[in-house]
Length: 384
Image (tube, rainbow, N blue to C red):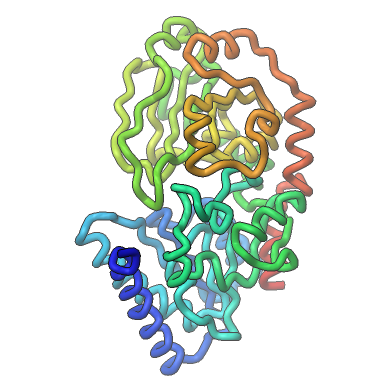
């Protein structure tokens, strides 16, 4: 029964493997070809965008190629995506460097050429939610039957992370030697050190949303809930009208959802709450916010570099532990107070009782280097 369910995956696996072998037979590896790939987005962004920009400036002799297509789970979308992955196999077979930022199926079903480096720039900082091999046996994770056919997170040459403390967790999740995991930082966090860019960002934000100019900004950025690329309709777990009634004179609430949360979010409270979709990326929203509200999203690792207050709203904590679990005890690791209902959340925002030393200690624990030069270090490590 298990093999029947996996049959489409197995068929796609051998289709991709066949095309990769054919491309490897017909074409040589181009020593100056670099391909960036992801199915998190239709365009380059976040860590990959920072590396691409630095590469263009420091090593312009490299020819950069881009393989980006957001996954569409409809029947037509899945068929279209097979052709997209065949296209990706051509670039994997002919690129000296193939760089990704998340799970990327074609990598795990081929035998890479020896001349090719496959680089994983994992999209989240720190280590909190279990993933990869750490989730085998959990409802969120892959089944043992699936792993017999698809060796997930295999074939990476190098992985880059934010600190040496989390190397053992990535080693477990990717089932790879610790020596291939390098704690050089997270490229997108360099943005927090670019003061001129942040000033320009503030001007752009206030131009787009004039009502924010005299308000303190709350940013709600929850984690993805679902499996693979599937997300049910998301509903806010707190009462926006109640928050507006208590906080609306002094605060505004920006809401940013995970890229896989494809369905629309209905937001009431216009003038207080704003659902930010494409106008600003998460790194920009973190940079301009005064308080972060999140649950299990690892954006709070990034946010610790700003040394600003955080409130944690893990309304489904026990369910999340059962389905996925954490590398650390959640209640002990978070660098801020926790709320489970709207009234407590409002109270925490009003009181403003935050432990700055706790945030600083957390930041130093999960970022070995804090200088805004992670992109530069990683590019030198790969290409220098």
